[in-house]
Image (cartoon, rainbow, N blue to C red; front, top):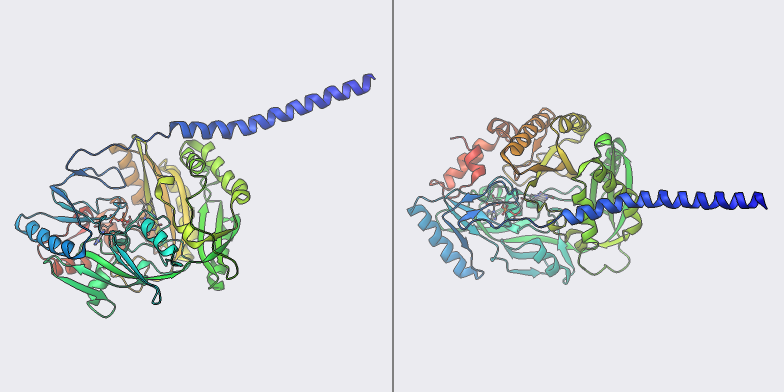
Length: 498
Ligand SMILES: Cc1cc2nc3c(=O)[nH]c(=O)nc-3n(C[C@H](O)[C@H](O)[C@H](O)COP(=O)(O)OP(=O)(O)OC[C@H]3O[C@@H](n4cnc5c(N)ncnc54)[C@H](O)[C@@H]3O)c2cc1C
């Protein structure tokens, strides 16, 4: 009797202890996520009238005018030519703005005129030829649903859908499309309004010089009006997930490159927990599956939870640990295994966008040859903590050689590291980011790499010209096509050397 009573007491105690441990274990993540959700209020401010900014929220600048392009082609062309004439007569700079997700004032000419391309967003698909005729202000978020019902998809784009065609072409973007060159490779032709108001068609056979200068040309050669873009079939993709040490990830990347055609998209994310920085990688490989239906396009799932996990990762080591655990342990069980290509591409930046008044998120991207990437990671492991960089995300991509653009970043096959940092929205926060950026840029340059240009203008002019030795020629050609320097922006102002 006495023995079984003692046993029952022990069993009750053990069960209680188990429950307590479970509550504690579940309690901390739950408390963390609730706090992250609770403190994540929308503090994005309206800009004062006459000011514009970009995704950095560090570039508020007074301009003379913001001019919306009308959607009708004829009216747009006539009025744009008049606007350029007016700008010339009044000595005003003109900058061109898509969705303004660049971060260095690339869409801003101080005291100048900003052309807002967003209303100029019509499109038409030539289904048989797989060519989308699209006006430059259209965003991928408008294009993907349009293509989806027609069984097509975007061939190369960024990892989110929030950007315009004109902005994407003008930075020559790239994404998770495995082993593909950047977007310029998918452009058949476009029409460009030059500084004198004339319109020319640019392709690999007509006005080839302007074709390669305006693609990746940061709005300095003219206004891209509309584009003939090669599209691909929408696909049913099966997810295969690997969580591996970083050296193994590089081996997997090499293997995928050899495997070829059934790999469609690859998304690799590095561990950013400070004590384990870059030690492991989650690689999501999406393989084409010929048999079976393509799932229908729907709204992105679990948005509030994913946002709470992501934004919570800005708050110290625990948030970063929780996110890594969620993505490596929990997500594989929650995720579906079969996706539509369009679904994977159709996600906006709102899911992770920083909306706080005090801080902002700053992107960096570096392109490094495959043989030097391990050295680059070793250096980053030292540089980022030395500058107290608050890393929120690091992804790795494979970008093939770009044979089309003049100011090219992928002059050979490159591995790209995309890093998102949170920083205070203050001058001191920006100075600290600048110092860290310059050290990382220097490291990338020493490893035959370079950095991506749409972000903060933190690299020195000397570093920029070392990264892009063709830039002096690029700017000379700009002035040949636009002798009055009508098309101007802060990127041009900082880096042009006359
Ligand atoms: C959260 C986030 C994620 C990102 N992810 C990726 C990624 O995965 N891959 C990648 O490659 N990049 C990425 N980027 C960078 C992004 O591709 C560029 O900032 C791109 O320019 C955004 O498009 P946009 O419409 O916002 O362009 P804007 O910022 O509006 O414009 C970019 C440049 O293009 C010029 N321009 C715009 N429209 C025209 C036009 N019609 N004619 C001529 N010039 C024009 C502008 O003057 C400016 O110089 C990311 C940026 C952010 C903020």
